[in-house]
Figure (cartoon, rainbow, N blue to C red):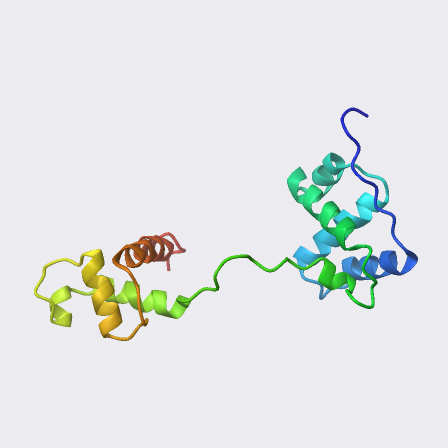
Length: 164
């Protein structure tokens, strides 16, 4: 084989048993089952490219879950069960301050004529929509720029969906 060989995964009997059970269980979310299959294939000696082809995923996905498993393997199963090892890591950054419901309300407001809200303008500007969103207490605070980004994303998500 050419190229560097990935770090091998050596599973304990209990790890292999739990991973196999996850793959076989009908109620396992497909994302977790895929990750379990990746770890099992890696433990069986397959390289990242072969696993990626077999599972129909990107080789970077295989590499990520191989490395994540290896990084967490020293922790005992009692402290960190298999399911938790295969769960996404927490996302970095600030938590979301504007909910999906609030975005919908902002989009709804932007789709209405400004005159309906008592604004003496013919079209919304980013600053005007942000001011009205705060006046209606949809959110506590929002900049015009952020309101414009939400609208651009929100409207494109609403118009590119299924028709019906």
